Image (cartoon, rainbow, N blue to C red; front, side, top):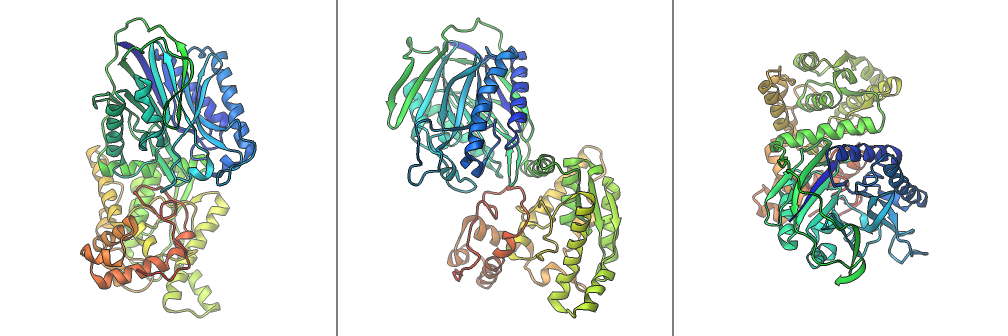
Length: 584
């Protein structure tokens, strides 16, 4: 058996920031070198950030990525890091394509990986399986690759694949056993979903056993628009044992000492066709094993509980959206209710209290406890808070145009939305929208009112999960000897929009535990009307909720983006027409 010290750089790049991402790669490569690593691997498209979406179709961006890759290789060599092999994901193009093939993107972009060594790429190889489901549109943006690169490094054969190639049968992973590789490196941009970590580990375990290779899975971390990447990089032994694991939701250099089988034979450097549709490309970096050394203990990061990882995802997504879009601070309406309380708490944990500004906007229908609960929240967390009563502004509108009923209720919400957006323009804050997924599903929001804003931290969080997250966050504070950030009354009181006297959400909606269960079946798994009834949901409620969800599609199209934490969110995952007469 041969030894190899592997470093996996779980980093947070920014889409389009080629210079900044190059700096990040150099910094972590230096850390890996200082740790004595023999190979350092970075996630999928780390050089460009991920996903680049239709930036892949811009020739100038592809050219810039390729230029940046070669500049990075030279820079690593010039700074004394050239003898450490570095695997980097980047945006490439098919070299032999002059004109686009019908049905493929112009310019033939590749989602690619390169191994940089001594100032140049040892190989470049493109992703074979291009996901075209859920949040992914890679068949639109890339053309597939046809090679499996295998590098002999310190007498070990190391194969490299990209993300989806691990998830799908066939393709380059099917060739790994034929290539007799001892280590399979998988570079990933795998977004977070609730419960996905166990799925990933199960997949890596299965592929390790199938290929009889140690699997090293390195993943991105950080927020990118609606997606949030959780890291959770891991290494799995060929017998299925978990050898090492990185923490979730934070940048980290995972360094692990591996014992791997010596490569078989002298090797055939160049190309060999050993699997259907895949050409195995063999490359030599170093044939001699490293001198024997004392291995370090394998790091295994502790796991977060399920609610804790959801909360961490929301905090990271909010932090990165604000930072990467260069907003100095955030602003939100504080109603004293649970939704705004949770969003405010997420914002404080993401940015610090000094960058969070709240506005209390009581109307003629606001209860006294709404104001006192909001004031208590601001006091506990140190939020910058101000009170701007909206009753005089609403009255001014009513003096100009007579409104009543729903129009009057919506007017109050729109006045509040206008106030927040005006303060945003004046003071430079990003407005956080506080609506949850249950409200978004049934259209329980006002366009240009409470739906106004630039980012919606809990837009993919069912109302019942909002309460769970709030209780979890308070319990965490108590465990750490801190004052719970959310007032108990904000959690326990019945939810209300307070747009008419004595109004409660349950006046027009069922209890949220009933509603959310039905919505999750309809939205999350696309069950039809009869299937929903067969699943045990009340037929009249099914008909009513389907109508509400379908009629609210136009509102969802105009809602701010927010982090995806479920297996099926509104937007990238679920795409249905606004205009449709299909109702079952």
